[in-house]
Image 1 (cartoon, rainbow, N blue to C red):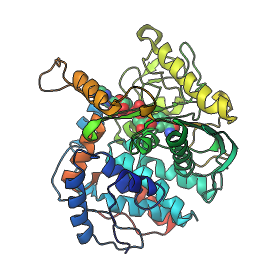
Image 2 (cartoon, protein in one colour):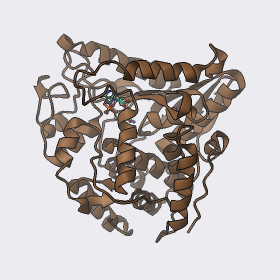
Image 3 (cartoon, rainbow, N blue to C red):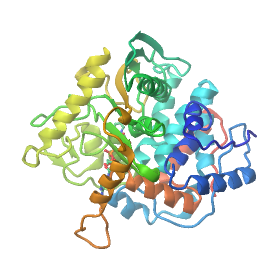
Image 4 (spheres, rainbow, N blue to C red):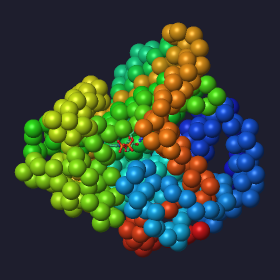
Length: 440
Ligand SMILES: NC(=O)c1ccc[n+]([C@@H]2O[C@H](COP(=O)([O-])OP(=O)(O)OC[C@H]3O[C@@H](n4cnc5c(N)ncnc54)[C@H](O)[C@@H]3O)[C@@H](O)[C@H]2O)c1
């Protein structure tokens, strides 16, 4: 068992970005400043008690109660009937994913980086980008369309920029490397702008913005991905779900963390509806004729998601424009594949390298007006303080919902997965000959 060592300063958090503390880094970020001392005390106590049955580094566990931890109203409705039998401790979810990656010959450090990213998504309520993605990554690794051992390489560099070749490595490995580089540059010259080609699916765009926020910087990240968005007026896909993120730290541990697909939803949310056997809301996906469909199977099979905003009437062309912007900044600028050049979306393992493009930006706000974090706090208060249409539902800021999910998971002591997700995990465990997931 590897002991859990807590480091609560910003510098120490940064130093841990690539190692087994990454999950705890994310956990700690949510409480930075505001609850720093309480968090450290609680985690330290849990760490003392934590045990592990594998060589995987231990993670703190928390008391078990029942709660709701999905990330959308629809998911909440459908998951509220789930039984607590599906509750998996965060540490166990992480152990399982690390074991899966190691079983397909991913070096431990990279396995940990990728698992930390995935478990963070589940912890934050973004089930679409957590365990739900595991099988796809494993399939790509198993047939060598992703190189689990690859290390990124800097191709060109100035004091404020870098062009990186991800060398077909795991998305989290490339992404962590690039954002760390951007942070280093921002700390030296005020701005770090790093573009990567040759990358793979990098999960939550917000993960990388969080790393910059932990250093008191403003962080941004974007990625292109396989064509899944039908441009306004089209019946075929020509852009990915191309997410973007912006993280801005505020005083006392508060923040603004926008992390969103530029399609109406991430494709993972269509997959989750399929896993649940639930319909799609209007405006998520098209059928082969370009009409809106509520059929999750048909929507998934057609592979034409609607841009953010939906149809032309509801300004979907703005989501189309944002998706194109992401591809220009990440795909075109980095020399990676872009638009319809990017390989098709598949869970079965692709027969070619993805060669995705990504961008990582860190900015030191101290280069501009003073007191950025205090001004951000005031900004956030003004937005949260507006009169809600429903008095029982206060206005949320970007990142608040995820913060609430993390609190619910902490309170419950684990993550509640869908039945179908757990079936996929059992099949994976059998196939890879690893210890299956165990439940609380
Ligand atoms: N790597 C990839 O290829 C890829 C592609 C698409 C999406 N993603 C990831 O998928 C995840 C989910 O994306 P999504 O677009 O479905 O997210 P989402 O629609 O759930 O949330 C988008 C943003 O809106 C905020 N938000 C949600 N509800 C809110 C409310 N009521 N009031 C105010 N703000 C609110 C969230 O905090 C978040 O910042 C993200 O982490 C994204 O980066 C990754």
